[in-house]
Picture (cartoon, one colour):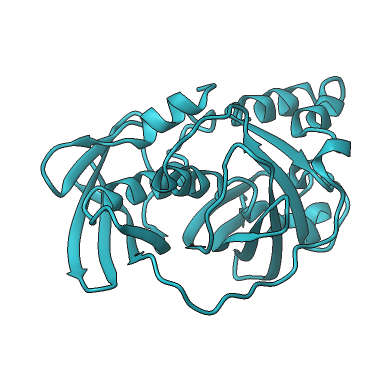
Length: 286
């Protein structure tokens, strides 16, 4: 999958009924359904059942079972409430009759009110940074198998410019902070709901790995199982997905084989457009 059109086609679910939809899977090289795909497709299902003047402002999801990449995902929407200002939806994703994910999402009509935000971090701009692929190239001769696996896992429809060394490549323990610039490779005029869905897809890329940074020496050379447990997202302001966005991530805590991470997504001009939190499993395999 190389283009934004292919991604949009993947995220646009097929109607089964007014509240049931079905979607295919992103061809993830690791063989399981990608969490960002389920987040984005669930949001697509919810958006399909709300009034056109309602825009998503938050979503909260739990990953229940690992998804089978060889089977489509069925999404069922529960129309919980349609209020004067807010609309609430619950979405459950199923495979082979079993729930693999559930999500609650809230939508709001446009309103004017108080407005403030935190300041974006003062870091290097994307123009002076190497891409993630350029960072990975350093492994080509030293660790050819790992190099190939990272290259296959690359999301080709996006450009990524990490500010620090990629978490996957760190061999020394580091403080749990990561900053990555990203955007779609193609410029395409799309609706705000579509931008929300693509941002939800991208928000699951690299976030949990921030929680491994203080433990790179411990996990170096070992088999580690990493998987999302839950994921929450808030949409604050409009944005363009084809322009550079900064994903500023940190991990306040890791314990009991779980890592907790947070992220703020800023436009290049410093506008806070979205916030994310996630907890995931980080388990050293025996």
